[in-house]
Amino acid sequence: MTREEEGAGPERAPRAWGRLRDLNLVMFLPLLVAMGTLVVAVDARTAGEAVVLALGVVAALVAFIRWAARDISRVALPCLVVAAAVWAFGALAMDGSAAFYGVSIVGPLVISQLPRHRGLAALGLTAYVAAVGAARLLVTQDDVSGVLLGYVIIPAGITAVVTGLMFPNQRFYAVVADLEEAREREAELAVVRERMRFASDLHDIQGHTLHVVKLKVALAQKLVRTDADRAEQELREIHALVGDTIAQTKQLAYAQRRLNLSAELENAKNLFEAADIHVVVEREGEVDPRAGELLGQVLRETTTNILRHAQATRVRIALSRSGIAIVNDGARGSPPPELRGLATLRERVVANGGELTVEQEDGRFLTAAAFPHGRSDPAL
Image (cartoon, rainbow, N blue to C red; front, side):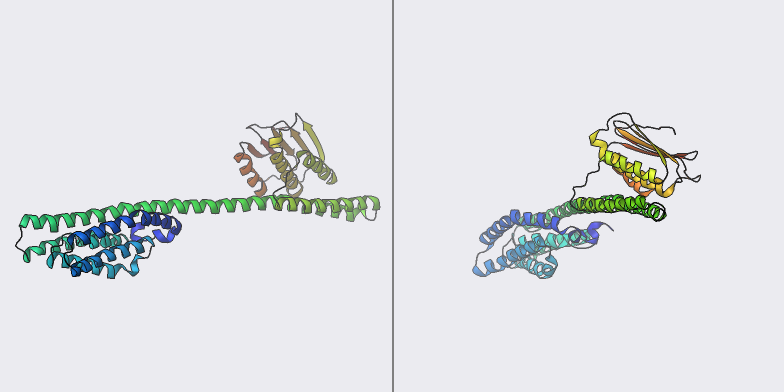
C-alpha cells in the first residue's frame, strides 16, 4: 500500500501541507470565483437557473476551501451531491453546457483524498459526467455532434484532466511532507547530539574528578596517622579539586568551558605521581592552539582510564605540534576493554579532521591523537 493510499500525508507534516495549501487557496480561489461567476452569467437565462448554477459554484468553492484547510471529508458528500445534481439539471432541464463546472471541481478534490481506489473513483466520475451529457440526447432535438461535443466530450475531458492533475499534485505534497519530516528529524538528531556532547563533557568533568578524589581520599587515610601534614595537603588539594570541578560544571552549563592542555598535562603528572606511577613527558613542539582543547580531552580521558583500568608503573606522554601520544605499561593481557569515553572522543576527533588511535600490544597500551592525520608511537 502506498503512502497516498494510506492517506498519511497531512498527519505526517501538517505545517508543510498547510503552507502549500494556503498558497493554493490564495492563488486559485479568486480564479475559481471568477470562473464560477462567468458560468452563471453565460448559462443562466432566468433567476431560477442562476440560483441553481450558483449552487454548483458554491459547492465547488466550499469544497476547495475545506480542501485547503485539510478538512474536506466533512463537506465531501453534500458538495458532491449538489454539484452532481446541478450538472444533471443543467444538461437535462436547461441548455447549460457549463453546469458541469461544480462537479469538475468537487469530484477531483474529493477523489484526491480517498484512502484507496482513487483510479476507479476517477473513472466513475468521468463516466457520470459523460453519461449525464449523453442523456441530453433524450430530451433535445439538437444536432447530435454538437451535443456530444458540448455535453459529453468537453465536460468529461475537462473533468478527467482536472482529476488526473490531482494525482501528481498529491504526490508533490507527499514529497514536501517527506522533506518537512526529514528536516524535523534532523533537528531532533541535532538536539540528541548536543545532549550526548553535554553528557560526555559532564562525564569528563565529574567522572575524572570523582575518581581522583577517591584516590586522594584513600591516600589521605593512609597518611593521617603517619604524616599528618601530607594528609592535610591532600585534603586541601581535594577541596581545591572539588571547587575547580564546580566551576567547570558551571562553565559547561553556560557553554564557556575550555580545556587548557598545559593545565591538563600538569594535572596528569600530579595524578600519576600520586599513584606511584613514573611519568615522562616529551615535548617535540608547541601544540597548535586549534587542536589543544581536543588533545586536552584525550589526555584527561586517557589519564582516567589508566588509573581505573591498568596496573601501570610507567607512562610516557609525547606532545607534538599537532598531536599527542600516551603509552602506559600494565595493560591487561585480554583484549582492550570498551572505553566509551574514548569512543566518543574518536567521533569528535574524526569530525574535526583528526585521527584517534587506540592499540594494545605486549602489555603496552597506546592512545594517540593527531591533527591533521598523523601518528606518534613513543616507546617506553
